Length: 108
Image (cartoon, rainbow, N blue to C red; front, side, top):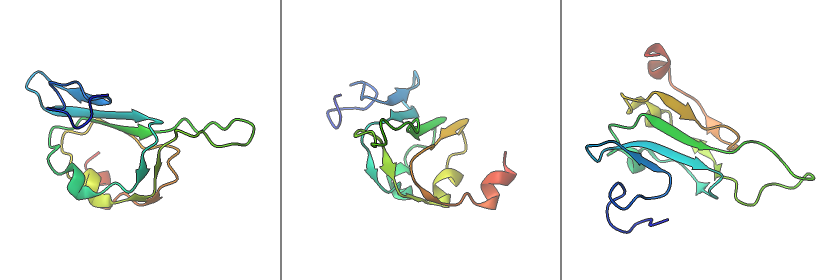
């Protein structure tokens, strides 16, 4: 896991993808028991981000929720607008609410 120990690229933090210049270009968190809100301020230094994947696969076992599923509640539309390099986004099955602003959609 190595989370919060040293550099996320050099110490190979779980779910973090970096380029050869040690810029974080990807976040991949599939059912990592993340709970809370995605805040724009938390991502402001990730200007090279290309891949944002925080998701669950939506399955249920015998009508019971998966214990390690991500639960992120609020989507801030300013979050996506700050990523000019973004190529891929997957925020599926998180139980989020919010909207994607028109400026982002126009740039697709």
